[in-house]
Length: 367
Ligand code: SAM
Ligand code: SF4
Ligand code: SF4
Image (cartoon, rainbow, N blue to C red; front, side, top):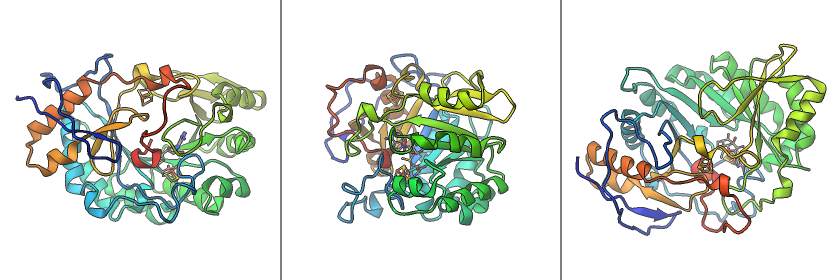
C-alpha cells in the first residue's frame, strides 16, 4: 500500500502541512502508536451546536449570539462518517461514541446510528455503539435511538438541585426534564446508563452526596469527572478542580465503598461499589491521576478532522481525503500514518507554562 500524505490543520484553520513519513498498515489491521497504545475507540462529533451553555464547556461570553458555528456543508455527511468509521473498524476500533455539541440536535441522527450499527469488527462482532448527551431530547428520542441500534447512553448531569443545575447549564433548563430523559432511556433499554457529573469546586461540589443518593439502587453508574483545562475559553483554574480522592472520601464517609477491577485495560474511570450493595460509581481523574499511558481514543470532529488528544491544537484533514477522491486504502493508510506517529501525553505533563491558546474546544471535539 502506498503511503499517503495527509494535510495537518490548525484548529479551525486551514494550514496544510505535508506528512513526513510513510504509513504502514499492520497485517492484523491493528495499529499501535509510538507509546504502544492501540487504536481502540473512536469518538465522532456530529455537531458543534448545543442547546446548553455549560459554564465549563460553552461559556456564554464566548458562545454568544455572534458565535459562528460550522456551516452545514462543512459537516461530514452521514455517508462520509460511515465510510470513515468502516475504515477505523477495520483497523481495530471496537467502540464508537457519538458526541458533540449536543448529538441529538443533529437531524436524523437515528439514521446514522442505524448505519453504524450494521458495522462489524474483523472478527464479526457488532460495535459497542453509544452516545453522550445532555439528556434534554431523550424523552422524545430514546425509543427511536434504541430501535435504530444504539446500545447504551451516557447522560451528563451536574446537579440535582434545580437552581444549581440551571446555573451550570446557564440556559435555565430544569433538572426534572433531564431526569425524565434518563428514565426514558432506561425504559427504552439503553442500559446500563452512565451519568457523568463534572465537579467544579465551589460551584456544584455540594451536589456530590445528593447525586450519589439519587442514583444508589438505580442500576445506573454515576461517574464524577474532574474539571479539565480543555479548550481556551472556560477560564480553568487548578483551584477549581476537586480531586477525585476528595469525592470518594465524602461518599465513603456516608456509604462505605470498595474498589472494583476495571472492565478492561485502559478504562478511564476507576470503579468503586457501595459495600451495602447499592450499586457502582466511578471517578475520572484526568487532572490528578493522568491516564495517558492507556489512552486508546481517536476523535473525529464534526468537519472531519482527526484529533488524537483532547488538548490538541492541530488535526488531520480526513475530509480533504474523503472529498478529494481518495480510496478506502488511501484513507486507511492516512489513519495508520497518523496513529503510528502519535506521541500525545498532555495530562502527564500538564504545566502552567503550556499555552491554552489554539486548543480545540470540548464542544468541537466532544470529549
Ligand atoms: N453535549 C453532550 C453532553 O454534554 O453530554 C456531549 C458533548 S460534551 C462536550 C461531552 C462531555 O464532556 C460531557 O459529559 C461534559 O460534561 C464533558 N465536559 C465538557 N467540558 C468539560 C471540562 N472542561 N472538564 C471535564 N469534562 C467536560
Ligand atoms: Fe453542551 Fe455538552 Fe458542552 Fe454542556 S457539556 S455545553 S451540554 S456540549
Ligand atoms: Fe489521552 Fe491526551 Fe487525555 Fe492524555 S491528555 S489521556 S493523551 S486525550
